[in-house]
Length: 341
Image (tube, rainbow, N blue to C red; front, side, top):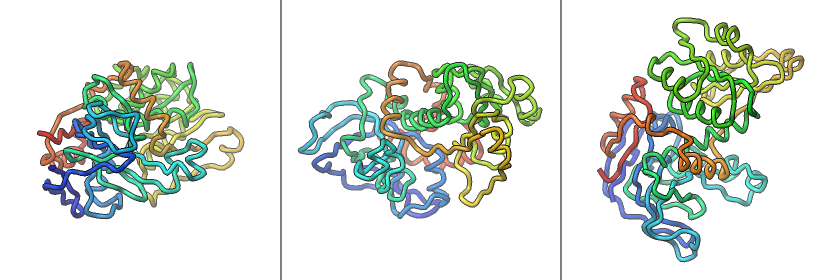
């Protein structure tokens, strides 16, 4: 089979590999589509460590072409989305449902303590417990189930309910999925700060009540004036400056959510008295759970999420370096790899 292998920092090569053979409790999925995300970008540039060589790619969907001897719930020919977070289901975190915090964290092509070959390949081997049926859903749409599941988990972490207010800093592909996730929960009003014109327009189309261009006006001042301080502010960029903006917008009893991936050595100044006096929470949101993945697949299947507007282009395995260059320039939204091209 053909696979795009990360052989060194900044070096990805399309090569021929043996087709994987599923173990007793695994399935083999012929990859129909695999999204390219910032995790892949960081692995490519060496800012997310991984043992090389490895095949990246963790936002995948396709068709089951082989099953292990002990697999009963999934059949050959079934179309599925792949949950890349492989939990041990034996540690304390897994037992309480926090599979994303598994002590033996393993990822299929993503970022984790242990990374195994992912879906920038014609075939990927997956535990049978890590696939969800997608019916006749297009593979490119189903491939967005993984990032959507992260958004579902993030929305859970905010504690937002119907009629609660939210501010979102950053409306890239993930931010735009977050807008739709919050809208589906009845969150209102939703304010969004985003410098890109096209992304602001999409945010408004997807349900944002207020969109702000931070290059034209102070987003904190504008959102606070138009909406007020909010029940939850979500930072989806990964920078300290934008995280400070989100925290400044969080009202008493509210929560600031660190959703974007900040640099590991970044530091944020927090006023302890404010945390005490206003009971403001600072929360993190990492990855996805098995439950949020199942919910994400259902949201896409029921057309509650617009995925088509987020897919900028569909590319072959050999076009990955060019896709990373476009991502570095902030061009487009979601690039989707079609390994069979």
